[in-house]
Length: 269
Image 1 (cartoon, rainbow, N blue to C red):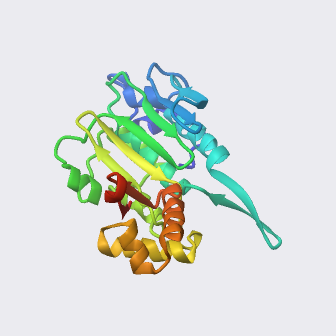
Image 2: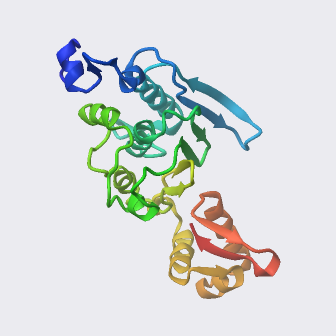
Image 3: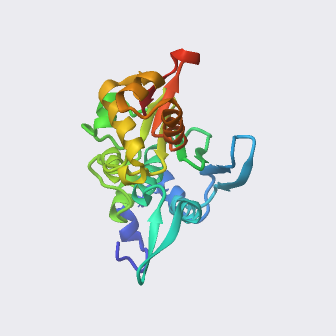
């Protein structure tokens, strides 16, 4: 915002302070110390019984909470790759999508609910659960398509917009989806009565798949779902090869299976 020092005029412009009522809740949330629960994050190991790390960011500025989350994200979902003479940072999950999801959770959550934003970090995905359902006047379809933008916390939203953490015009979901435009597995969104969940999968590009995996993935995308025997017949890979390829796609979370025994069917996530 190109502000070197805050004064009363700037605070009034940002709607954080008025001569009549003093500082408001938005100002408290942005202050270095406050009384609000923030973000509870857990990094899991192989399963939910194996907790590798837990951090609770609370009673501090929501700007600090966002920065702490980005630092934790970079530790576990970024790595360096040397290509020729260059050292490049590679995202396992697009940082733009993660930053957008956390910023939107802080801006749109219900702050009068005594609950933390829950962030669960897994090897194959990140789940972000934010307290509070959709604002009044918007339905799930409108939320997912970005047709209507209703800021629950307009003052906080304005500050985050000025700091370029979010876009003001309701493009959060679209920006997250755009970060995954070349990915096989897309983000998922679930809207509940009292919470909203965003799931960001580890980025899998088509170039990360073998020729056989691409073949089966394309078949499943066209046919919706197929059995192992149907896939073996369509591809000519044979039973054993088809099983190995399907297991590889399952491990990469590109496909899912349902049913049991010979009735098992596979489909694209």
